[in-house]
Structures are given as structure tokens and as C-alpha cells.
Length: 93
Image: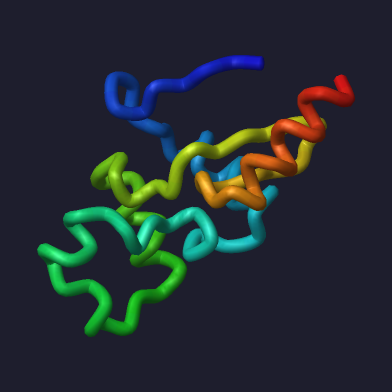
């Protein structure tokens, strides 16, 4: 397991494309809880997949975190249900 601090070492286009491949969409990776989302009033704009990708690459806060990739399966965000699934998978390793 590897830890990637995207605040100190921003996500690359290649890394983002890989987690996009696993998640199926950039919107699924995009955090609508980010302060910048509210500051830029993005909820009132029609964002495309390309927009979501560009915002994530532009600033780390737009990537929903944490992101776990375990056995080529992706887990996005810190919801209780998601964290329980991650713990279940990690305990089974």
C-alpha cells in the first residue's frame, strides 16, 4: 500500500486518468464539499467531465478524498459506508 500526499505532490494527469478508469467518471472523483466549489459558485454551472478533470488537476481540494485502490477496485471518499468497506477489505488481506 502506498500513500500519496496530493497536497505536497500534486496528482499527475496519468494518475488521474488511472483512477478515472477505475471510477468510471471524473465527477465521481470530484469533491463538491471543497470550499473552492462554493467560492467559485460551481454548483450553478453545468460542468462537463472535462471540467471536472481540469478542476481536479488545477487544485487538490477538488479531488474527493481519501481514495483507496485495493486489488484494482477503487473506494472514494470518507463516508462511513465506504470506510467500512475499506476496513473489511483490508482486514481480509
